[in-house]
Length: 166
Ligand SMILES: [Fe+2]
Ligand SMILES: [Fe+2]
Image (cartoon, rainbow, N blue to C red; front, side, top):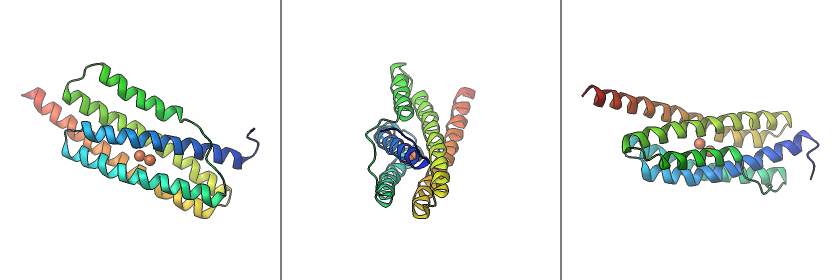
């Protein structure tokens, strides 16, 4: 079906984000299993639960709009998932894998922040207030997770420097 109105684009972008969340949900479970640092493990676990709620929020958004999500794959999230696989193929040491996974998680969160920032704006432009509120909830969680991941990256960097200094 051709996309001809801002509302069509909104549904299209929402469908893309639904796919991204489903891909990210699986990745978070992998990242959680791989994490050594207790803070990283905890952050991935909590964000996995948040992501389940985010998917529910998106389902509620579609219900409110009286629309069905399109069958689509988010190529950006899929690309981030493939980067994670590629890191594994480089035979990383446990420390490097941990740092690489945190860097990958930061990319993921920033992609989600960009997506939800646009979606909240589109919902407001379409005067869909309840929808905007649900999307804002997701956006706030992504922002909090991005901060958390950046904090962990700093911590891991500090540990690596201390180890290098011996
Ligand atoms: Fe998310
Ligand atoms: Fe996220």
